[in-house]
Length: 230
Image 1 (tube, helix red, strand yellow):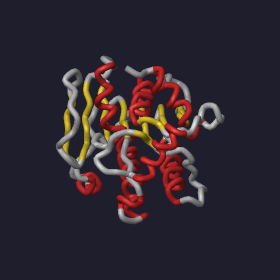
Image 2 (cartoon, helix red, strand yellow):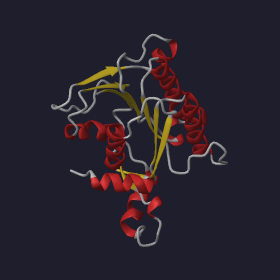
Image 3 (cartoon, helix red, strand yellow):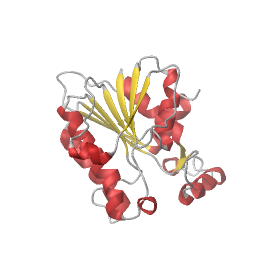
């Protein structure tokens, strides 16, 4: 299998690359990143291509041919982006542009990280944008669309996100499982990454069937991540 990874320098993108050693079915990974620095994996050929989204938007660069899947791990926060407009550019416009081109190139699978609570009709801007991109991707009718909705993420980042640090603290303090709140429990980024790969290998669209959409909520991501820990 040959996949394109968008957002390979982020928390989940890095975990995708580190996890690939356990999946010999994946023969090549192409990483698009703003920086040429990206985690390497000696067991999987990884090609890191430094791409600016301005060049992608202008048509100077395009998705490679022969892909089996696109993993979209792009994501930021409004605080880091600097404005709601910039946040929507990164979390909505870039993924949609990539998805449209993937559809044109007949890529059979598109896999994207959104968020718990994604809802195109939400009064909360963050959740609304996440819901809007889900709606647009559904409309493109990929043979298979995987949507992954994690709660607060746990893991090492290049920058500190206060909300996620608080979530990690609460995750260690509160017995979410015993309280029936597992859906809300903060989740390690590696569990989300492994769930994406698990979906790639097991959610096979069948010829002749309508386009398939599968949504992985946070509690399911926990179950898959725990079952596929190494």
